[in-house]
Length: 295
Ligand SMILES: [Fe+2]
Ligand SMILES: [Fe+2]
Image (cartoon, rainbow, N blue to C red; front, side, top):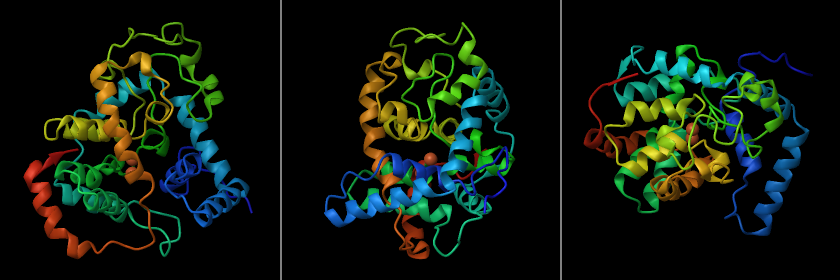
């Protein structure tokens, strides 16, 4: 039976976008034949499912409405940080109140996704700020709880103010975006200059940019790049925007690529023992971040 699709929020839950990413970019490290067969099987099931339509609808509205002016207006609004004062722990708890229509027995809540990401980073012996980045990287999704539609919170991010690359998922949907025919914005460089640096480039609005703006005074550059660009798949996977990047960006994107597998491929059905892990994370959060942050 076909479900009614909510025009602002077509996804049954935010994870559907990440499940779609997994189908687009299957885990290359799954080397044995069994794992590969399983991935193929999952892909076939996925293609046949109703989810393809909901994800497609999600991208249609995302690509239609993420214009340069839209990003400016969201920045003006949310970068006042006047919604809520929270500690990281309150933000984690708040994020967990996100209503999830999917099966609670199978799916992990947001805290568990964060901990699986950060624990995998820790297990590989990376520096503590990298572990912390894994733990907080999706906290910007609290935007959903401030009433923002899914298409302005999650999804692949991309530059606005210049031509949309055909390396972005479902590029045809950009034809409905007013910037597509706007001469200020529809050339390769648009309002930017060659290799101007991503610092000067506006990205589509979502949880990545929002959390970066909250964290920018507290974490080292590689951590900030991971937070800010982790959904910028058309660059970190497809290299579609090299013409906007400067030397520092190129160097820092090694870190963004290092982070990506921990984000995408650490979803295991085994739930992390939140209680046992808490003391370590309390100390880690206190080392880098202030008691309260403004969201
Ligand atoms: Fe994310
Ligand atoms: Fe994530």
